[in-house]
Length: 204
Ligand SMILES: C[S@@+](CC[C@H](N)C(=O)[O-])C[C@H]1O[C@@H](n2cnc3c(N)ncnc32)[C@H](O)[C@@H]1O
Image 1 (cartoon, rainbow, N blue to C red):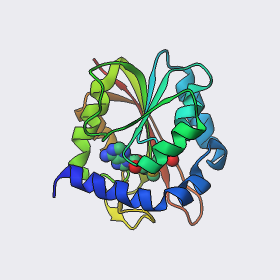
Image 2: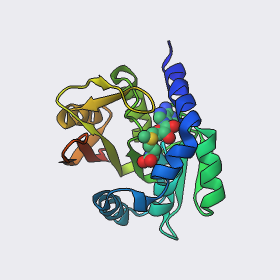
Image 3: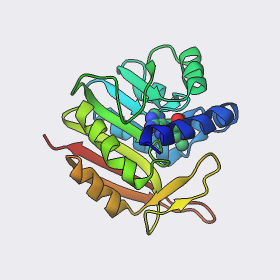
Image 4: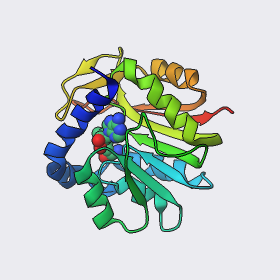
């Protein structure tokens, strides 16, 4: 099976549960305060347009826009994009695969990939990271949210199979795609999956 078919399968699963996902996660207030603070602090340092790669319902796209920052959300799920366009006026929302972004070149000062590559099998991840690097300006910033674990191994996520990543190993993949890792963080709660984030900068 091709990578595009795998991402199509993931998108089809999100289409089936889009309404419930929007109810549970479709606003930043439903996220943990630490996530809001992290994303706000990351975005505050950016000067220029921002891409929310795998934006889902678009709530983080709107959050990053913060009234005046140009922001664009891309996702493969029509139901999410319909909701985002109805709910949020200012950001642009486009249907696109992260592996083939519809942008000519280095136009974003930042790319947020918030839990949007969690369903991507390890073999399909490098081309997506290359693509995120391609659309970033030199020295542009990436913030990646993911589930942290000891091994890059699959688990039965509620929507579609997903992968745990050891932060250091995911950082190595980022470096292979031309990023320098700036910061790594994890957050554990009892009886919950460990959250991870990596912030990185495009090196050239
Ligand atoms: C766990 S959700 C996260 C959504 C949003 N970033 C959030 O924080 O709520 C994963 C999202 O990534 C999107 N996604 C996964 N693979 C994708 C791909 N190859 N191209 C575009 N979007 C993708 C899914 O459609 C879904 O909306």
